[in-house]
Length: 457
Image 1 (tube, helix red, strand yellow):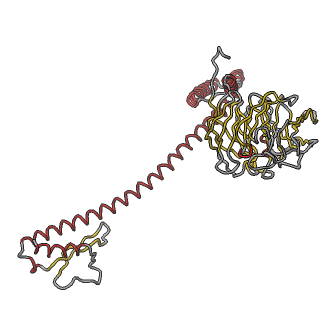
Image 2 (image 1 turned 90 degrees about the horizontal axis):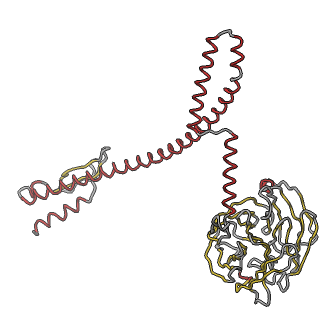
Image 3 (image 1 turned 30 degrees about the horizontal axis):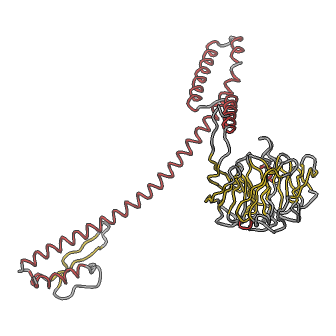
């Protein structure tokens, strides 16, 4: 066994040394080239050297060793060739996968374009065919070529059959039918929406950036009490020393910068937490706790009233400051004011207001510090408070005015532009309007609803 080990160890060691016939290195004296392996492209993989025949040719165990070396060499060559083929196959598969994905996308595009073109061509052919129909009786009156007229009628009948088949296959409806179907769907949607009761906030998606304009701080809003056809937008840039309100007839005009009217308020505002409700603007008068109701229709202040004990002028603002002491908002249940008082130790106070007189109808004291709140908004009588106005903010606290109870929540939302200075819920749009570092954005909200039955409604 010792003699076999003495021979085997150096031989196995030499298997690890690559050697090519074309190289200048030659085997040492007493050794000879035993075998050389090449891959499919003729490149040298390895060369095996072994002792000359006269050293161990008479030893039976030496012959076994040579057979073992030959098997090792064959296996090494096979493995290398298999590895090369595997790499080539993998690269081929990767190219094929990319081509297949490209073809799949092209097929989808072709299928979509085909349906559009066929439908368009069908409508054009149908219009031409209908315009040709009145010619038939005229041609029949002249009787100049009865056979030609017959063929013409037959061709029109065949074309009509083909077009009807295409219509059935493509599902192409005429404009009146499509319009009626849309109206029916809209009626069903309105009926379904009317059966939705107030919901609990579950998720916030977005934002959708509508426009980038103004300074870092400001407010923009629509009227939740307006009709579906009334989509006017109001825009208030800055949080102090300003009293100019810009009006736009629609979101599209707002994006395009097409103003329809400008209002010059009698008093400057404080903060960015204003709200438009039922045709009036409600805002906090600068350097006071007075709430002002301004009518857009008359262009005058309808009423103003002090919010008793409410802190103002950066006494109890949100975390970002900006004289955001008093936050006016609206939801499905009406008009609200969110603020803080010394009596409640600087914690958030929620009051429901009479929209006409601004008198307080009811008040709830929470235990959440106003200065630790990033922003807040009302949905269905529940106040939701964010824990920051910066990146990583989330809806952290919810207070229900219905049950006078609170809970801690964990509802994240994407603060895309890193500084939120306005966040208000619009019950008509079921969306959050935000002013995010000079960007006017919209967030979609997911509410958990309870649908009333027919008996309950």
